[in-house]
Amino acid sequence: MIRGINHQVIEITSIDNKYYERALLVLRPEYSSVHRDLLEHEARKMLKDFNTLSAFQGKRKFRYLFFKLLFSTIFGAAVTTLIFLLIK
Image (cartoon, rainbow, N blue to C red):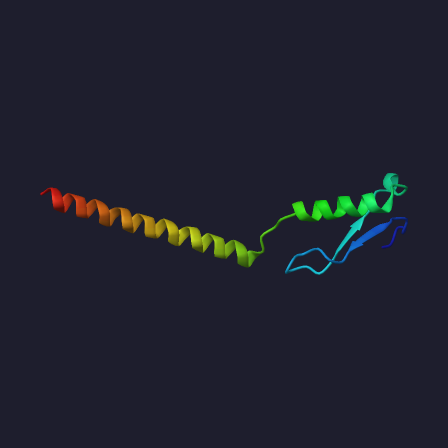
């Protein structure tokens, strides 16, 4: 169902993201008379703040933290065992 097409759209084509090639932003009607440069500046600022992790990056980060914790635990146990063996 199409209701009406009274919206202005800003298209940002160079968003410096390796997953997305462009962004389409729908402008609110009360801001349709604002200067175009200001709208594009705010759109780019919003896209820079919009930082999301893909599922692949999230899994990679989880694996990195898991192995870091595992290595720290093993290293701590080895040092503790070595200290107890040297004390006896």
